Amino acid sequence: MSRWKLYDHWYADLPTLSPPQLHERRELAASRLRSSLARGPGRNPKAARDWRERLRAVEEELTRRGVA
Image (cartoon, rainbow, N blue to C red; front, side, top):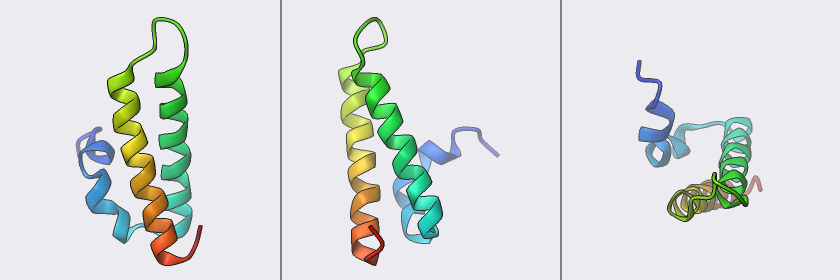
């Protein structure tokens, strides 16, 4: 199994995940977003946009299910 499977199938996997798994994905996306926006050499605006979209997708799935 690819170590990148989590990222490759991010959007396709959301409907099949349990609420705790969705919360874990939300935390992962939020932490990656924070690190890509941090000052210094790690700053990456393109990655920040990507993680913001992934975070938004997870939050929309949680809202759709009424879990939030």
